[in-house]
Image 1 (cartoon, helix red, strand yellow):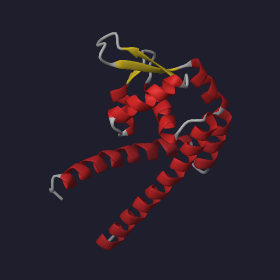
Image 2 (image 1 turned 135 degrees about the vertical axis):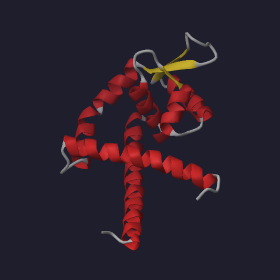
Image 3 (image 1 turned 180 degrees about the vertical axis):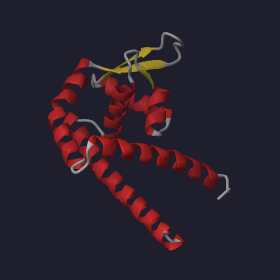
Length: 160
C-alpha cells in the first residue's frame, strides 16, 4: 500500500507531466496556426468550432466554454477569422442577439491539407498506446478534469 509521501510524490510527478504535455501541445498548436497564417488562439477557436458544430453553427458562448476563455475574446477573434474567410458568423435563428459560427469551405480545405501531418503527429504522440488504452486514459483524464474544477472552486472559496 502506498504511503502518503508516495502518493504526494506521484501526484506532483503527474502534475509536472501535465505541465510538460500542455507546453508541448501549445507548441504544436502554434505550428498548426502558423501554417494557416493565424494565431494559436485563432487555431484553437477553429478547432473548437469544428468539434462542436453539428450542422447548425456554434455559439460564441459554446466556444468560450469549450476553450475556457472569455466570450468577448471569442467575439473579437472570430471577427478576425471571418475577415480571413475562415468562418462565417450569422445571426442565430432563435435569438438575433447571438451569432452562430461555422467553418467556411476555405477553412475545411486548409485543415484537410494538414490531415496527413496531423495523422503523423498523432501516431508519434500516441505511439505505444492502442485505442482501448487511449479510451481508458481519456476517461481518467475526464474524471481528473472534473475533480480539478471542483478543487479549484473549493480553493477559491477557501474550503481547502
